[in-house]
Length: 520
Image 1: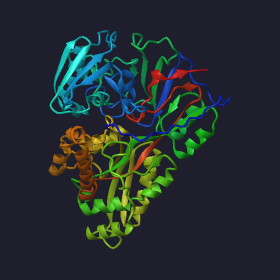
Image 2 (image 1 turned 120 degrees about the vertical axis):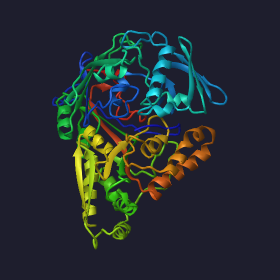
Image 3 (image 1 turned 180 degrees about the vertical axis):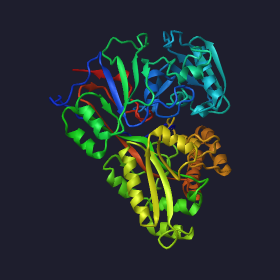
Image 4 (image 1 turned 30 degrees about the vertical axis):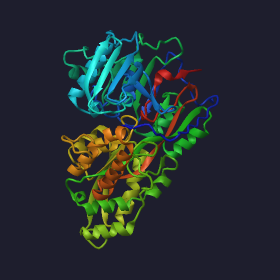
């Protein structure tokens, strides 16, 4: 999930729409709900300080950050802050705040609220709280001015746009905020507030408009946002056709082709910063053997997977996708079954050795991940390796992963803010307890290297890039802790009457519903 620094490749968006035929419902009226379908549970953590998973799709409509990353300018743009400036050495940042903003609790948003929310997030130290590691002091100069003093320079305007841990919230909402949030309450400033939450249900979450939102409600907007969990993509497609849902965040190539041919449905194709990752259990079981990990890396039919996904994915080079600082070119992985066989034989397995059983978990309802699991199962079978691939609801898969309950963990990752450090700092840096280092890599040399990257990214970008190259080599080659089979190409489908939708790759799968315009 998470971060990056400036340089991003130009992104293409193609949308086709016409008047809807009789069999396809029109977009909801302004007073109706905008209904979003995805295949995974929406909420894993309600606390905006510690949230670090799927709930970004709801939180970005409930909470706001000081800045927001703009995919056109590839820079931070105003959100709760209207302007900002930094000192020459990049260690002092002053933000001017938007006046007239209130929290959903009714209390005013001001510099004191910025200071208290970020300091609480830093103190809890969970999720993506590391984004504030450079901060040594926060001063509320006056109600609409807040100054950050840093221990070392970082691009704080980008940090303040992060999809996680950068939310500003009302710390006075309750005496015990952590418990208060767990009940499904919110304390944001965003256009929508929580109306209801039914954990584990299909119709999991409903948001309603916050009438005192600083942006106003004069223009047509959706007054309600609903999130439905539908793992069966064929059913999600049928719901869209019947007009029961407004937006489907991912379709298989087969269904995407149908959507693009249907004049009552709009579609969107766009490159993303989201990568698929196969994380190998480096700590225990047969994958603890480096030779086995390298064998699995080489057994993956990378080209075959890309071909099978028919436009839903693109090849990846290294760990960080192209367009983000830290990307390493000319490292696209290739299948090498002969090398995989030799490595397995050296470990005592393979066609002439002992049979090997491996377990893999992936997200239930994700057709793309299922394709990879199926192809890898077939390939490994020829090498006398039985792969038990298990589709699981995300929360169950994640819980099992934290307990080291599988050999291979398949998941998606994206940046917290617009740079590449997130892939390394959160997935491959040693951590205890386990959160997202689901390869369980515990390598002091890797940690020491990674710890230098945030500051170098500002003070010596050439040295930082060399560090990213070394980190990529160590994680993928020397430690063989993972394999990255593709970068996601977003394929969206939504009702023809929905106006104003666009993807922002810094906030994966987020629909900024307030920006949409319903029409009949």
